[in-house]
Picture 1 (cartoon, one colour):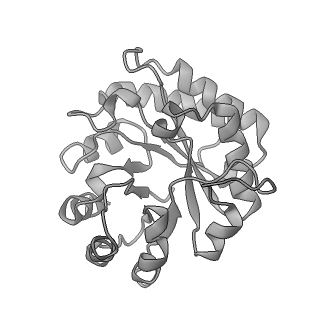
Picture 2 (picture 1 turned 90 degrees about the horizontal axis):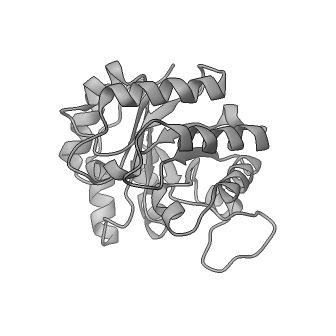
Length: 234
């Protein structure tokens, strides 16, 4: 299976010039799918810088419905018009702000209906919850049962306690949870990524022993030297 790297720039990048400079400095891997998800306001200005390198353009979120007008949201049709091919749905930070799993299901449907690949994030919402995987397995199970497009998706497991933390989740725990998620998917062809304090020092171990197919990177993706060092591992 092809490895996958997702760069989630969140709101780290303050200006168009900074976004263009970062996009221009990124190295494209040879056999790995690399998707950059900038802030929506920076999608148009970096589009050509990425496509010329073979790097795919992504977005950080999508509205729940294709039909219902929604203030402050982006529709799949708007995103595809800007050249977006992938979109993050259900990121832990959006779940913490009120997005529930039923809404994630609708976002997945909306994305695939407009030809966009959803990057489905699943995460434990209680930071002190033991990382045994029950909550994320339940989240994924509901999405699988209520959509018919899981094979067109990418799954990203991101334990909330390890987003922006000092250390990633223990590799053995990642492996256990990844195996449980694969049991839900029942297909080995769907990529499962890990996100949460990944760096060039721990990426190889997580890939080798965590059973994942790549990473969803946050802060590690907004410094070109760090991002390129991780890309060089693939």
